[in-house]
Amino acid sequence: MVESSARGRVNLIGDHTDYTGGLVLPMVLECCTTIEGDDTDDGRWHLESADEPEPTRFAVSDVDLHDLRPRWGRYVAAVVHEVRALGVAVRGFRGRVTTTIPIGSGLSSSAALEVAVARIALADDSSRLSDSEVAQLCRRAEHAASGVPCGIMDQLCIVAGRPGHATLIDCHSLDLEHIELPDHLEVMVEFIAPRTLAGSEYADRVDETRRAEQMIGPLRQATVADVEAIGDDLIRRRARHVVTENQRVRDFVTALTAADDAEVGRLMVESHRSLATDFETSTPMMDAAVDRLLATPGVIGARMTGGGFGGCVVALRRR
Ligand code: GLA
Image (cartoon, rainbow, N blue to C red; front, top):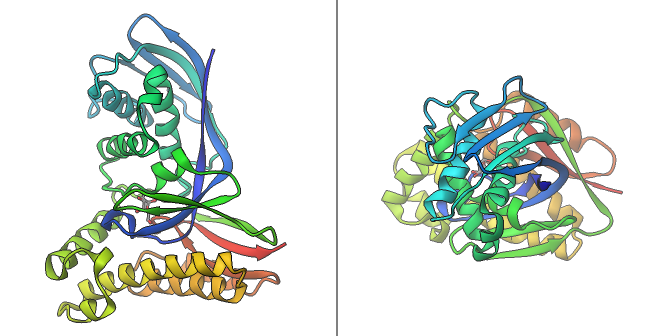
């Protein structure tokens, strides 16, 4: 019997920065996706899912993502395809997927599925690959399966994250650092509305930041003064979010380490406002949830988390 598990993730701060090589601070959650099953010699994958009516089946040597139904099977097949592209002889597999990650809620259920599949498909070759190589493989699979040009945050946090710690990731160098959460704080995640990034304005935001970079160079190195020189109002606002968000991630880590709750909370709220106004990825329901959480006793900060356009909000509360 083979078993592979991967956790969901929530981002504490640093959203819409990863695809410009910026800074992010996600952490793994307790909820996870688990695949159990057995290797087979027939060269085929056959996975049932407790949450999907139809199983996914495909031949390892003949993956055609476009025609593959049901759609969730595309994530599985895309990972198998990427692993084979590394020259690994992927075996057949028959098994079952279960998950405690709410699907389509912005807690990276698809990235967790990718990572769990990658560990099975890589089998003994897993040890050849670094965490960031596994994450990059899964990111390529996500692009192929969903068409969403996501960054590396979700996959790398899920591969490398440690329970009880946030993962500070430099999405340019892919260096990471585990930051312990202080004992007196707990993370609250509240689901607001279902969302899928496919077909959302996510890809527009990626394009808009590219346009900003054509004007002023890499946003991870840009200053607020550079941003203010951008003539186009929309592009300037998008760039301003990214540049100020990178600084907020740095300041947040400093404040968290110093147990400066007031500053931690202020930065979360500022991040939310920047995502809502400059980056326009929040929704009225998410804004209202953040305001409600901020009025809750013990809550020091709250913000939307992840890609936005629905999904979840995250808050930090004193225990
Ligand atoms: C989604 C993407 C990530 C990241 C976030 C926003 O979760 O998958 O790569 O861009 O949105 O921070």
